Length: 116
Image 1 (tube, rainbow, N blue to C red):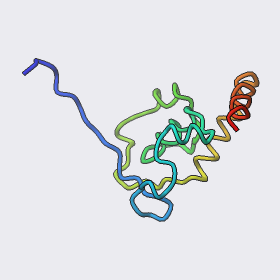
Image 2 (cartoon, rainbow, N blue to C red):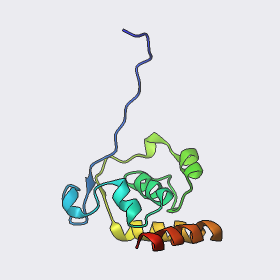
Image 3 (cartoon, rainbow, N blue to C red):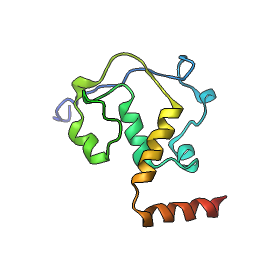
């Protein structure tokens, strides 16, 4: 009707909690803002969420946004349900925190101390 090309759609597989039931609010944080308030870095969340149901065919777990964009291929998205693993998210967040330049880390730490 508007002479636009029909968009292509795709969706990720179902995400399960650690108990293997459908992920819901009873599993913990329910919004990105809640994760941010708990100290999770945006790049760590993007990295972790990208790995739910997708991989680039390697054993690599830590990506920058640019690396994810370059590596992403829709054909590598798996149809199997993915499990939301808080311990892996915490580990990935720790890796991203360790990779921050000292001034950026110091700024985040000062902000977190001010909120406490």
